[in-house]
Image (cartoon, rainbow, N blue to C red; front, side, top):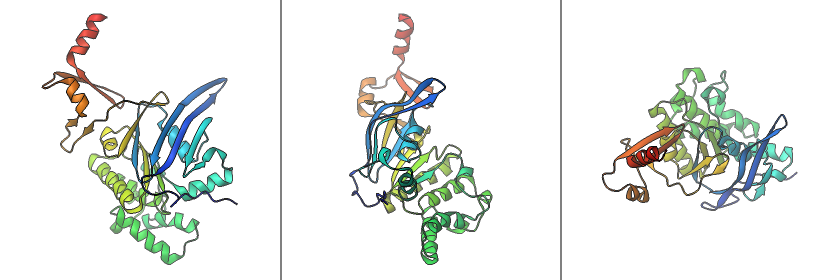
Length: 291
């Protein structure tokens, strides 16, 4: 029986995840719908990457492929040098258990409602047969990491949304997986709670070397990542320059973008789905005139 655990298989900064010309086509009746159209990118070990783009762009399909929940229709998805498309179903099950932690959208989906937070974090450790003393130590370490030591005995309904999501992060990290996949982890949270979750992500990267891939519509959350990959119509949108929102809420543009706009530029901002377009106001006037 082959092992598919990749913990420790590469050092920090080396490629851990690689998609090469990955396609995912879903069959609906007699029609094939391409969720991914030949996506290629690498993610390094210990990197925090955000996937952004409008609904239906292919973000969740990438999470499903990297998480071993689905297989690419064509191309390859490699983790630690192993092609997930070539693994048996049994090997994929072990891969999901040992290599990937999942943090799903919706706090209620991540925790067992009738177990205390402490027991929720302990369950994945029990599944791997760890001795009780080791389990208690790991649970205490993880709850401290996410700032919930004093809430360990609480049931999920007794926790705030942000506390539930941080508790779910502790569960996802219980077996110290090399990869954490997070699907809209801040979608249901207020600003302060979202910031605590994102800070906990950063701590996980620093303390455990966890590689995080986060799907989000939240541009402020995406700005906390090391790198942002933008998807549109199932493809990576290359060439886009990343802007970021600073602590005061001001939009910080890349140097090239600011230079193109010019000093004291009169600009307009258009928000569409999760995309923000900044352009000189004269562009709209010219477009209207041309039409």
